[in-house]
Length: 315
Length: 227
Image (tube, rainbow over all chains, first blue to last red; front, side, top):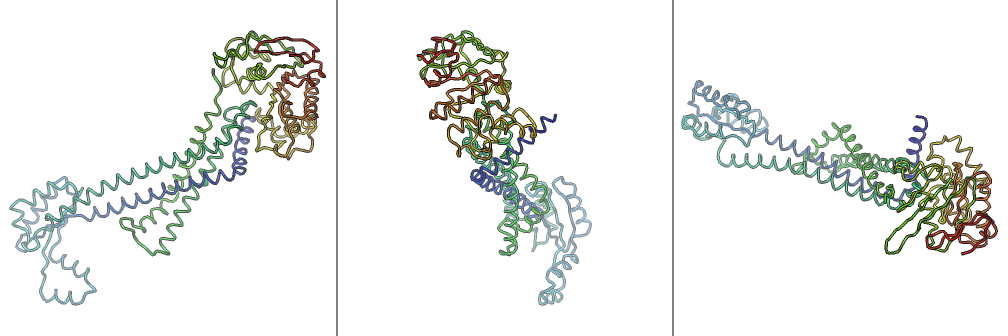
């Protein structure tokens, strides 16, 4: 037992010493790891942000049926209960003429002229039923009820229903884009991770190739497999930990720059505020993710790379 | 201590056998010199003893270990029992003199205090006291070889195998190395030395085994150099 502890502490010390003595190769390996780990972290944050943006857009999609002023309360309730029975429908809200006016006034409280005009003409706004679908891409049942003549009769002839051809196309497009972007995000993270594993593996393998004589000498002196391999693995894990910390620091600096210097709140689909909150809210999780990725990549690639120099001749 | 029974090693069938039915018996505490021209099979013999190569046929038993029954994972244990010195020294370039010798002891799991006690004593035997902090590149060939011998004997092996240890050295340094090997032998270690240095063989007056084309051509006690 004591001997095992001595050996373990020697393996760790040898790894750290060798890390310090091989500074130039260490810098190369770390540089590659930092770049790739940063890309992975960036894609994780970016894909989370994009997903959030898409979900928000999708949540805003609802169908408004504007009712003519002649529609009775019974007819309205009848229509509402029809919608509520549908599995596609998440919720149905009724907005009366008064509510619509109040909302309109609240939204335009800065515009005195508009408010004055509206108080003169009386209430021109129709009552409406707001249908919130479960999934904006599946609204066939809702569509069927809307296209029935009994429903059309109740609709406001001027406003009709906000649900018409153009809008439907837009909803479909967004729903489609949502799915594509989600898939792109996942694939992107996977591809970057794979590429980074390959590059780091290659770099570590090169570092070990440079020291294959050392491994063979140790072998000839009777060092066990793990006594030789251990320090290389410790060394690569050190690369992994350092690279993970640096990559997190880089993304952190990126946010500081983005929020202070650029004063930007969004870049296209990327809502920087959300990304910022996501990054700092899940900071520990992301840090753990990066650290474990760095450690696993370092350990696995150095274990594989040392394998061929540790083999005994069997023939 | 070392027993070879009709050992044959063939690397390539077209080139013939590197070692051809070689039988050799070395008693404990013997000092045996193996001579022969380049390609006679000296190095192959050494590589078989350290289990860097496997014989094509024949039996090898060293220090009671039967190589036929040796599993791959036990090879490190075998090598810890044999001290080996190579023509090209094979020092660890990133470790200083002290660390190179200490490494042989660290492998076996010996404690730090014992290593701190042993290494200076061993370096004293090979006349390298006070050079602990120097890196291999700062040493002359003879000094490097003596570090390698220190490393080989640090674990007090029963057998020391030295393959052309003086091959890269000038006569003065070569004799420094040979004197150390004699000293080690006096302390009770079986030494197997290969060389083609005529002067060394003639002056040592030890048992000489001559290899020729992979076969033992002669095996004489207190002999001189003769091919």
